[in-house]
Image (cartoon, rainbow over all chains, first blue to last red; front, top):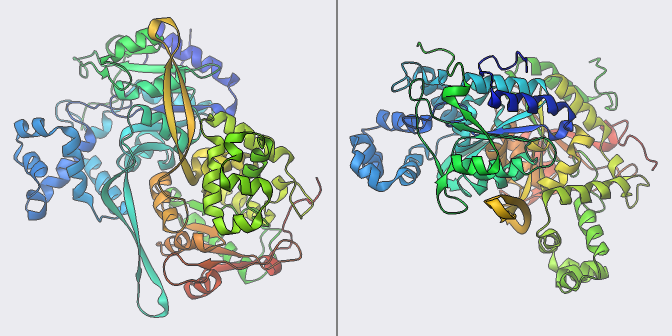
Length: 310
Length: 310
């Protein structure tokens, strides 16, 4: 097929499958044109560490002399760079402890901190700003979908507010189209002087709201948050399995895309397993059985990143 | 002021306040142009009963010979029209029991049921289809905001999926911009024949997810769901108080609109109290103290409904 919408995709079966879906899209009812993209490892680089974790650690380091933080074992291990202890604790426990850094902070302050970090953060090994580690071929796909009047959404295991702080600038996705893991908020209406007027404030808590947005929760949250079943879903890991299954099983044209990180020259090479439904197996094996479209980063993408200079 | 955007609003202080906000809107940063409207009693008529309750009762009646439903005391009282018992039980308990009617149903089926009901439902006293009980002046305001690139959202105490089933047709609002009360979903991936392929299904449960979307929860849910603080909020009852306070307290131009149902000729006349923060008081008194813009349906609206024939 000849098409100028996906210049960074190499000709081949993968690109043909994506173009075939785009060709079929005008036949999909406009209100069903919903596409859901995972973020980490699907729209941008997630190695060697999640960007959100880098951000949390950056804020923690800036407050390293706060005894209330240094006294938390998980945070002390992060500050000391004690990888052995961190490995024993596990990422989830450490991430929950890191949420405590932002307890009581306003949403606006949190967003400002994320944006300030993103303005200056450099990737650990790629020699470029973190904000330029988005995948050009996926940005082209997002643009092609938007030209077809798709509502493009991000469905991430990461924090909703972290991704929302950058989703418009990076992907053109407004905050309400980002479904992520959430913390609870406390609304406090403080009395402000005479006359009974109030000065309302909204504070972040360190409590996770509901369940983390991975696996089957991604499907439930798509329903509760977006209210529409996607006809296109893209992911790269076991946490995306159910979202891809749910999308692929829909009526009419659908596209389930799985990004395979097999490019240790331009990005990273690693495998993900899917353990949320049955016994652990490689997500690539699930994809093969289900007939999803697997994107080989090494073979299918002519360009990975837009620019590699700061 | 001369302006042709609000033809159903009568000249006066209220219309002037709305027009002043619209005139200031171009000075608001595009990403802050978010407007949140309550639904029942703000965008459409909520008397003599909530439309969603009428829908629930309609579905219940169609299944009146189902012993599993008739054996539930709350549902039996509804089916018998036993107002004394219903009054003792209270609306919240009855509404929770009515959720049970839809347990196990797919979201698509629920949406189809709502739309079928809305296609034929007649208002109890106004002599018109329920779908034509939206307020024309509010539709004009929504259109004016959209012309200024506002993201127009609905923040309702009602069920998110009920409102989403009609929000695009009635107001042009997509499902992801509707924040409402939610039920939990169960995702089940059933094995389907050989080869290990799955047939995934999503089922409604009868469990309310988190807290009902009223009062301070409206503010928290605006943050978790929409991710942006509105600069315009419109409501009509105590359940909208915090959303209006939160909006009015923002920086830059804001507009907090309270619809006063004082028109027993064209609609209904009733008062609402606000009890979520302090001791109960009339929401009109809260509005007066806070300086919100109160919309008198009787005085400020030239037209209330678009058409009154079926």
